[in-house]
Length: 214
Image 1 (tube, rainbow, N blue to C red):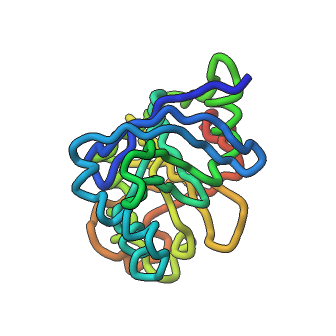
Image 2 (image 1 turned 135 degrees about the vertical axis):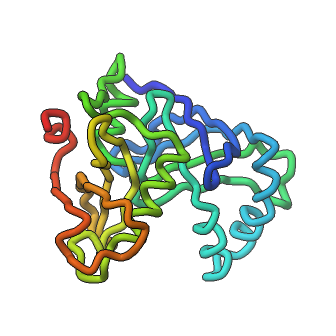
Image 3 (image 1 turned 45 degrees about the vertical axis):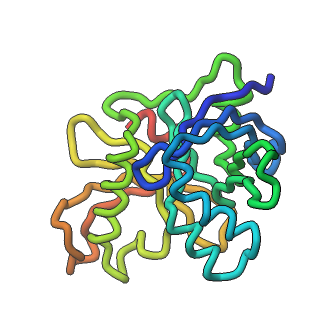
């Protein structure tokens, strides 16, 4: 049975709004709902307006640079292949603002939106991350990766951290593929590119269920 889930929407580490998302296209992993902005949203609204006015390369890059994230009320961050989009038009100021996540992991759609009650759960020692941690983990991984590291060709999103090590669980995706994977990375916290491609250490997983028994 489909159900709505509340998400908090962030630009970088600032809460810009909330939304009640529902599955509108299960096969495509599309979640959609109304968007309730906070005061911080109006700091970025011009970028949203310009994107809808003209989806050229500059406006697309400006939208990407907003670094949008959405966290479910269960603590899970969404990582949609098609990204996030806020529907807010400058020439339609009275129209309700809406929010979309397109291409969400299928197991997230099933576990968090279709199963009742929701069944998604991380096993110890894993725990969900907060937005400040998520950004920190992603930035650190970006600094540590060398061009020849196995993760260098992937996009990644921090999902969870271990309570008893420096391991971080990332959802990963190679551009051009329609398959999601996961990776556990042991960050070095050197804050610089590692010269040895064995570091940071990484282990790949195909299924989320495999992570729960690690």
